[in-house]
Image 1 (cartoon, rainbow, N blue to C red):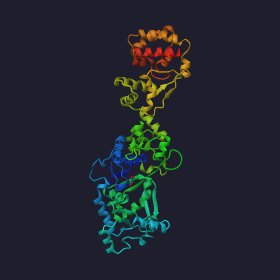
Image 2: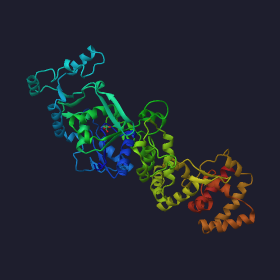
Image 3: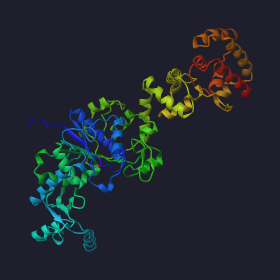
Image 4: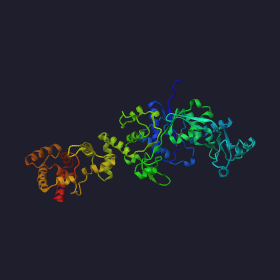
Length: 520
Ligand code: GLU
């Protein structure tokens, strides 16, 4: 038998913003599909109209665009297996529901919500199954003619799956191995509701996976309890031979404590649980997103890929999408929950941020400057980016040690680059660097130094060097650290000649004068 073409799907229900766990599921599907040269399908499972949230579908599509997770087919992408929105596939499901009814593998049930409620009061741990179904109002207990009449009269009904008790149902899971349960614990799940003429998740999900020729179902662990029912449905339809292989991914756990990651953890500890900011259309509540927080999509992808899988110690943790596609191994995913380490997420962002080419920093810097009310030119911005990358983010301290500043987000840059655009307002005399470098004689020396600057005609980096270097030789005055205090306010920043050239003569002199006045 020839190998089956790999076709996977990501099938969210549009009930709100996509949770970061859902993003991880989609990513694993994507990595698996790309690794096998297969197809990635985007299906919208919107058969539960009561939970539909406007904007959710668009949000999900935008999130994947931002993350660089591309689908081959599906809602908004097109393809040969459409429509890909379940609400547009009603007629298809009707036919398959009928098939199960005709084969005696499903039945009509007319029990009203009140009747079901009464039953629950009567029977302890009531479940609609082999032990109770013959005491209920359904097509197994009512005469066929009456059933036909009730349907013709427009009485509401549901179609339930008839689960045979006492059978071992085995789910072959690529991550968990064989998971076996006894069918007696399953209930006769509702597959279809006459009220909205729509199937439930279970039926639509199975029928679509079959019709869309899905080879692997990779989804969150929370769906594992549904898998035995799904196996039985494939059997009932006679599709066992083409049943997809299952892989249930480990849960994402809280950063601290027990249980699965929730939005509340994010709110409490200050990290987003959604890829993009989400504006709830009903409550107006705004939930933060990775994009708006200043994360780079590559960092989010890298971080999520390693939550539940890792390529082994011989590989770096910083991996591009292409490397992830090559290394990913579905069968090596962990069975245990993966702890959500948001500090690590910031660490990944730092890695990607500092390795970005200068050109990509300019628009980001521009955004920060605008937000702080600063108008400047692209040339100046390029200059600042270059100087920052060289000396501000990675720098050598006074003792000659190589250091890196903690720049995890673009927004962290503002305090580090503010001095390029705004003169220091006040000086902190207690600052170690200030105390050490602003002495009794400094003000007098800086006045002499100002005269040299004044006389410098060519105020470029080179021009300054040519004028000032010989002067320091002659006089023995070392103006560098005090000069830094004047221009930056503290012991950080780029080469002083470069910085002065950037600021220009007037601004440089103004800042020195101001410092002399304040520090004396
Ligand atoms: N619609 C389900 C969800 O919202 C899909 C589950 C599955 O992948 O089977 O996650």
